[in-house]
Amino acid sequence: MLLELLFVGCFSFCSLVVMRKFAKQINLVDKPNSRKLHTGAIPLIGGISIYMSIGYFLAARPDIIQNNNLFLSCLGILITLGAIDDKMDISFKVRLAVQAIVSILMIQYANIELDNIGNVLGTGEIRLGFLSPVITILAVIGAINAFNMVDGIDGLLGTLSIVTFASLAIVLRVDGQSGLAYLCLIFIVATLPYILMNLGIFGPERKVFMGDAGSMMIGFTVIWLLLGASQNQTGMLLRPVTALWLIAIPLMDMAAIMIRRVKRGDSPFKPDREHLHHIFQRLGFSSKQTLVIISSLASTFAMFGIYGEISGISERTMFMLFIICFMGYTTAMSYSWRMTTWMRRRKGLSDSTL
Image (cartoon, rainbow, N blue to C red; front, side, top):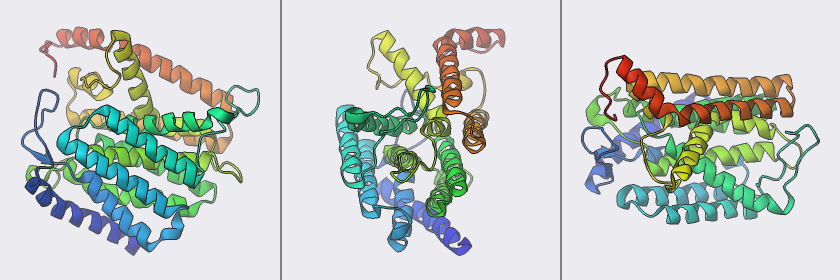
């Protein structure tokens, strides 16, 4: 096991080194603009590298996850879509259409869909019935875009994905699903080299970004595993409400910012600089400090979700607590611009947008 993990990590690192040179040759790079304040053209190959590592592992261990070939095929479709988007910036409508297609493939051929949302109201299990396919497609699209939207500062997407995969591994291991728990660990090991290079640990000249290819792959993998575990036909491996806590920060941030955009009359997919990481940076925190704060918040939510799952806190209580947290988060973010402007003036900082 240890040798296998070491090999996956080394494979991921080597693929990053090789792919970053290839990415520059084909201009698969991220260049600075009004919203992207990094320096120089950064290769967008983090997600492709992780996919290659996971694909190699699953080719050798196809029995570790059901519908292995379908799973890899769906990831391959999203990786291709993301790479094209990274290079050509395609329409969000095309992205949504392809994401819906892989959702349908998952429902139709893997028989994975959101049908039972549990006893979240305390009145018994709630089943979605004929609405299940539609809600599943929305859930998949939501998860994919939630992880895509948090990819705003170095290390954040990778770290949040590790928080989710680690939390899911713990829950699955407790429930005796050692194979899927091990797959989560493989994803963590495959992601670590990317995080190190993304943070510039090996030098700024070796920096890489995840790209839309990687964020979509991670979001889809997370929702595949969460639905597969919470909607198991032979019995739930984890309660659906627990899934909310394991992806709390990406989910809350996406939902809150879309609500604000719609209220302003903008498209919910219109880019801006009002995400949680932007708020902390406006308060004067550095990128690394912001990374630590948000990762700590995500870990706290996830640990509480695990605690509620293992200790058997009622689904109704866990759901109500999540809704309270979400409402508080949404309210705070609605006033965040005025709050940060006031606090920056108090600190004597420039009021210009970072």
